[in-house]
Every structure is written in C-alpha cells, then in structure tokens.
Image (cartoon, rainbow, N blue to C red):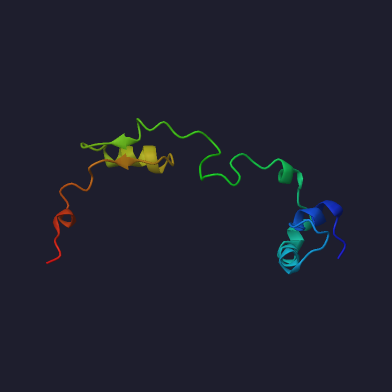
Length: 105
C-alpha cells in the first residue's frame, strides 16, 4: 500500500524504516482515517494531550460548589448543577444515614 512519507514515519515507531507486525497492525486498524489524518498535531499536540484528565484548562473555583447543611432547594440545585453541568460537593450528606452505624454482627 502506498503510504505517504509523513504517515509512514508516524506509524514507524521504532524508526527502523520498516513496519513491524505491531506497527503494521496499528496502520491497518487506522488505514481509513490515516488517508485524511492531519499530522500537524503530532509535533504540536492539543493542550492537555497525555496529561492528567482535566489539565487542558484551569480548575473551576470551588467556593460556590461546596455545600454543607442546609442544602439548597432541589430546584435551585438542579438548575445550577444539572442544567449547568457543574460538579457539587455535599459535605456531611451521609451523617444520619443508618448505613453509617453498621457493625459486622
């Protein structure tokens, strides 16, 4: 298969000018997308690539995302966190649950 030079060097991970079984398998599995792949990201990957999850942007300020009793009204909570796709930290929510007082007996 005629593979463009830039694509060949992308798949030739050990740089021996030959595709071994694993490199060839990698190319075979990606052959359709490889025809149109943009190799500019190989040298300049997107922000956060191969980094910890979420490292592509600064963390959210958390002072308005942490709640202690009394918790907000369910409608307010839904509008802010569910519709707004924001995380929430409900501190002490497990206090008073029967499961918190169990024993092995």
